[in-house]
Image 1 (cartoon, rainbow, N blue to C red):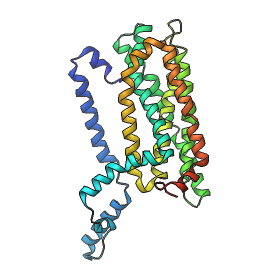
Image 2: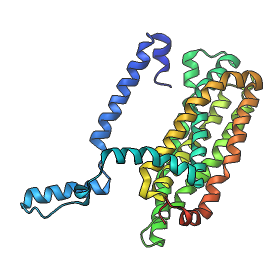
Image 3: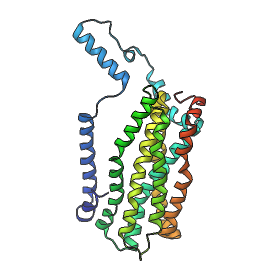
Image 4: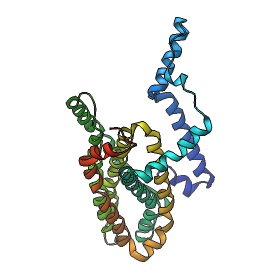
Length: 298
C-alpha cells in the first residue's frame, strides 16, 4: 500500500500495476535463487539421480521415481481433499475461519483507513497511504521476535526426543489472538476527530504484530499437524482466506456509514475476541483431536 500510494496520486494509474508486476517479478527471482528445495521426496529423487550419474550404478532409485499415478485422479484428489478437510475436521475448519477473518479485516482496512483518515482527519491519498506504516512496523517488530520462538521450539524438541509437538506452534497464536482484538478496540475508540491522528496509527502496530503471529502460528501448525496432507491443509486455508479477503472490503462503506468508525471497528474487534480462545483451546486438546482425526498426524 505504501509502495503504491505515490504513483496512484501523482502518476498514471497504469503505474499502480507496473509496480506490482515489477515487485512480483523481483520476489519470484529471489524465490528461485534464495529458497532451497525442502520437499524430502524431491530431495531423495535428486540424490538418486546424482548417484546414478556419478557412480554409474542404476540400482539407486527414489520412491518418487517409482510412483505411477493417474494424472486425472491426482488432480481430482488435490481439488477435493481441501474441501473434505474443511467438512470433516472441525479443528482445521475453525483455525481456517480464524485466519480468514483476520485477513479479511486486513483487506477491509484498505478501505477503512481511507474512510477514517480521509473523511475524519482530511488526509489526501498519499497521507492516507502512510497511515499503514503502523501495521508494517508491527509486522517487522514481530518478525524480529521470531528467534525467541525458535529457541522455544528447540527446547521443546530437546524435551520430546527431537520432535517438536505441533501444539507448541500455537503459543505464537495465543499472543496474536490477544493482540489483534486489543489493537482493534484501541483503534475503534481513537478514531474520533478530537483524538490526534497519530494515536490510531500507533494503535495499529499491535494489529500488524498480531497478524504475523496468527498467520505464522496457524500455517506452521496446519503443516505439522496435518503433515500427510499438508498441501491440502494449506490449500483449504488459502481458499477460505482468499474468499474472506475478497468479500470483506465489499461491505466497508455501508458498515462504516451506519455504525460509524468506532462502532464498525469495535464490531470487528468483537468478532476477533470471540475467536481469540481458539489457539489456547487447541494447544491443550489439539493432540487428542489429532488422535481422532483421519487427516492429522497422530
